[in-house]
Image 1 (cartoon, rainbow, N blue to C red):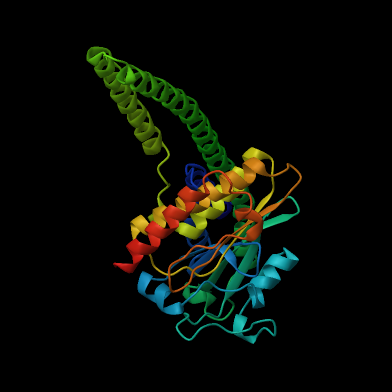
Image 2: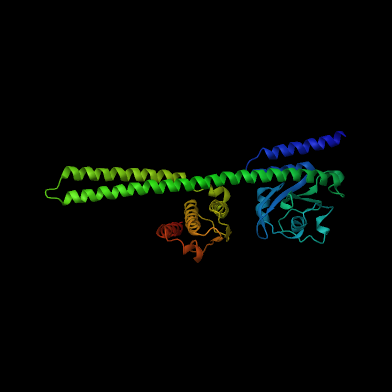
Length: 357
């Protein structure tokens, strides 16, 4: 009885640790670390599938950074990982290598025998999978994980699913608020600068008319030109303030492709237009180049969504070549009537900067 209560206490503490986290990445890291501890495993991992045949997130515990780098790219959804995702039920094996569904691993991958995997479910949807490998206790050398380990990990996975869903909702609400705020700032900028430019033009024309009179009124001409200068300074200050407020997200943390994917999904949701995003393997870029490419894609998507019908689905594709160019589909560029010069200039500037690295 005491042992059972101790196990439940451990699960409870692990759940509390997970629910304290607000970001999805932190939640995933705490989940996998807690899972490894709860079942006494040498290794543990958590995979969240993407829309293709790989994983959007794959977090490990028990593997050093050097070992993880040596393993190589993220695993594909095949073998036992695919079984867990497709069947959505626990798998407990004394030796995963002897199972006919096992399809091997990279040369640098740690050697594993005992295996315990459970799905992380939200109703009928499988959000991801948690698996542990190599039970560390001496008593488990041959038998591996127990039925009780499976029950504990399944119980923990059920609570982890709630925490992961809540963290996703929290991040989406924050990001959507950012998108809405940026849209509002852009609208305010447009209104303010348009009014300033109209006033500048009016005062400039007045100065020209006064200067053409005989005799010219130098004082009034000077006054009109001073007003033009003041209005120009105000417009510049407002423009800089809004630009600073619309700074790109932390591209170093999330990466260019992931940052664009998140923005595309949220921007589409804000405009009521479904958006899909695909990205090729992008080469390493300087920070200023990544920021500029983010701006190009952001502006292109904004223009496309602004002119798209609500029932249309738009696709944003990010690709690269040796020249460092960012390409957009014809269906998107055809709608960039407003701002196409700025987009072209951004792309040229980015390409020139990259050429000097």
